[in-house]
Amino acid sequence: MPRVRSIFLSDIHLGTRACQASALLDFLRAHSAEHLYLIGDIVDFWAMKRGIHWTQAQNTVVQKVLRRARHGERVIFIPGNHDEALRDYSGTVFGNIEIHPEWVHDAADGRRYLLIHGDEFDQVTMHHRWVALLGDASYAWLVRINILLSWIRRRLGRTGYWSLAGFAKRKVKKALEFINGFENAVIRAVRQRGLDGVICGHIHFASKRQIDGLTYVNCGDWVDSCTAIVEHFDGLLEIIEWEAMSNCNIPALPGQGETKCVS
Image 1 (cartoon, rainbow, N blue to C red):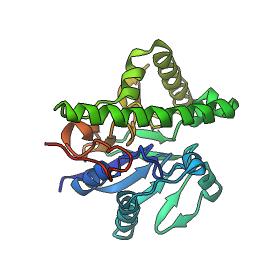
Image 2 (image 1 turned 30 degrees about the horizontal axis):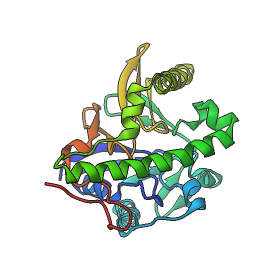
Image 3 (image 1 turned 45 degrees about the vertical axis):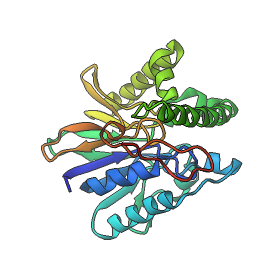
Image 4 (image 1 turned 90 degrees about the vertical axis):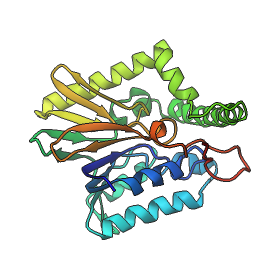
């Protein structure tokens, strides 16, 4: 099992049909670490108000994280907007998992990174909550459409996972403008704190780039892209695109069970 210094995960959205828990389990089984950071929207309380979809694989994800915490891996949970109820418990420890509103990570190369979910820099989420809730419900339907498209692709013999939401983010001008505005707002806050960079989530768009001399890193998600950030023992941060490395990440149609694997 490859060992890394740190693993950064965000936007797993446990409790939803969209959560690709089986792929996440494969990733966790393939990587051990000294630090595991859960950077928000790990459990989707928003979606669970509409209906809970909790699979055995999702349950195993929780058990595996708890087991890693018990066995000495430092696990820090930074709640996001979808699991914001846990922010009331900041500063406490549950099952050896520390809950904090944010964190500063000291990397092996001496760089210091602010760890935040990122919803604090989303004007829609902060000031127009009803719009955010409407968008969340719409996104859930987009995921259902994506599941159908994945099923059609399998029937046509097309391997690999293709994300409709990810395609829209890359191609739709308004989506790109939102992402760029979000990234710049986060970097301004990091500069004010005198840190070297930020590792965040929230927008479901994995990225690692330099912005005005500071490092911006986004973990992506385990709904569309199945991406994580790992820190190697020399301090190097790397995006792991697990959906490109694993063939067990295509959701099944409703009623067909868990995530499907293709050869």
